[in-house]
Length: 92
Image (cartoon, rainbow, N blue to C red; front, side, top):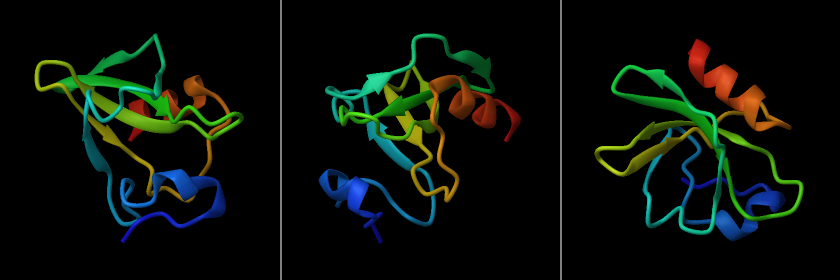
């Protein structure tokens, strides 16, 4: 199942509603990736958002070596800043 909220209309078919969505670096080519991730487990906790004006940020676990990002677009909570989303990722 995909996120069908109106603000996510361009993301239909990409983000899942029930779990994090794993996307390759290539699939995130046009997305904005926060520049200050912190180490967490086997990756870096950070935040990403699509290139849509005033769009919410998504917490993300960035696995550099695998070139994969787990995007937490299934959360009901919205994050107005990259730092807020990354802090959530760091704590969870």
